Amino acid sequence: MWIARGKYILDRLIRGLPIVLAIVVVNFFLIRLAPGDAAQVLAGEAGAASEQYMEQIRRQFGLDQPLYIQFFSYMKNIAVFDLGYSFRHNRAVSGLIFERLGATALLMTAAMVISVSLGILLGAIAAIRDRTLISHLITIFAVVSYATPLFWIGLMFIIVFSIHLGWFPTSGIITVGADYTGWRAALDVLHHLVLPALALSCFYVALYTRLMRASMLETLGQDFIKTARAKGLGDRKIVVRHALRNAILPVLTMAGVQVSAMLGGSVIIESVFGWPGLGLLAFESLFARDLNLLLGIFFLSSILVVVTNAVVDVIYTIVDPRIELKRKQAHG
Image (cartoon, rainbow, N blue to C red):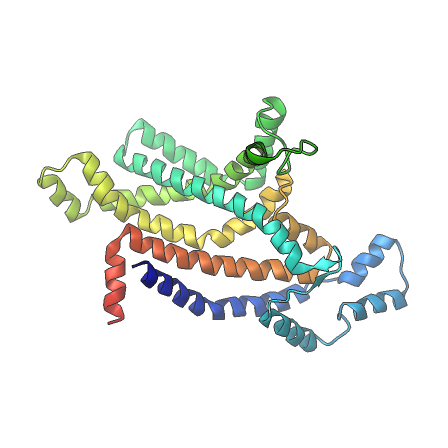
């Protein structure tokens, strides 16, 4: 079974390659439409620079070449996973990205677990207790969270929980100068993770709560639920064994689709909390016109989205075995 699922993931990844390629091409040309380049940024930081100095910088980074030559050179490098060189950091782009990847992966994983878990729980409760006070409170919470900007939530978390209450640090991923090791270092990272993860998950908790509530209400009205009740099954068994497993499928679908949006949200949250991940790195590289670094981050993000959607498809088959059966029937 697991071998078959592994083959299925591999098949989905192969099918996702044209998507990644299309994203790479579009990103390359869209970024080139932005005004300014690395030479102008460096000249501006120096206060003044001669035209000869700027032309030297452009030659050094290949910016003096025609656009089509830059494009083919970039695609040739991408084919061997060479993401180029960052003029801002004087380092290879791949090294910078993998250095920051762990922090973003930790933040997004925590936010995803929180948002999906709470969304399913709150949505199920709101559907089961429909038209009661708790259902109305959950609905109000979902609407308010959905409409509130992420940066405002992050700032309010810092003001309330960091400045006034002093429960959590305001920024960073570790306590500078503490030199913790082992479990103390892990707990220190988790302590710094709480506020960014909660802030990033707020919007998605609201989204999944509303989706889960609607899906659960629809499922509870299906004929097979009425049949289960007619057979004398208890409400708990009906909800857990029948309704819940069917109702969470749209939530899982949305979670897979929202990975790219969560990456975009991480740019805001990492900037607010000074979280040293890919989002903050992308924000800095944008203003520095560090195009190679920015393109490398986009390339890795597109791969992450394709991989996540393949994994979500496999989770479908675990949650609802009927999907696996239909897939096998489709392939003969």
